[in-house]
Length: 205
Image 1: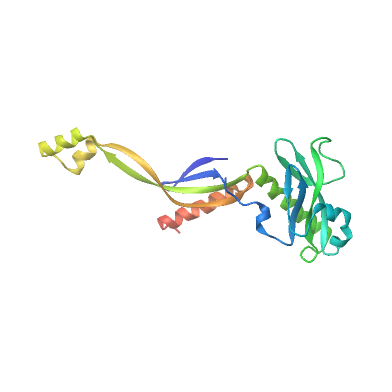
Image 2: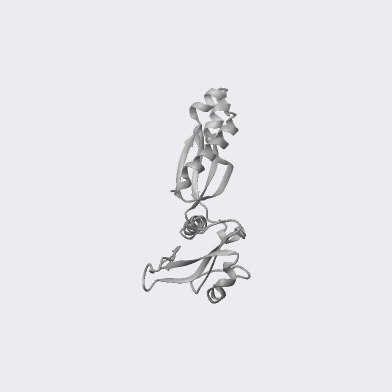
């Protein structure tokens, strides 16, 4: 998805966010994942997957407890456990998503929210998180010392004469940026936000 887009003379650089937060850093107590596998671990204090498995009724008083499967093969891909593993050898059910019953009043609502969280996690795990950098052009003109001396000696030094012999180049200066857009589905939102920033910079609002 990385690309450069020009808008009203500015450059919008769309780049992968290589320093994004994990969804686990958001500290949402109403909807969260816990997982315990040697190749993929997500911890939450007071919510150990093994304890949830052995004492599920204790947790089900306050949470919808939904088992999650991880397909682990050159990466990690999560899904709600449907009773059939994605792959006999490369997948495991070693975790859960817990959805607060106070926040999500019925199981279907909890499942919808859970699927949204799984999508977010999969985007994070596959690196599908992006941001934009906005740059403005600064035009640079340069001439050699020999040409400069010639203009001075001949007395023809003027802006017009200078531009006739000068080499033109463009240096791009970063003026704004924003990060943390999840997935290619967010491309329109990302570009809309970047264009709005440029509209404000040029006063076209």
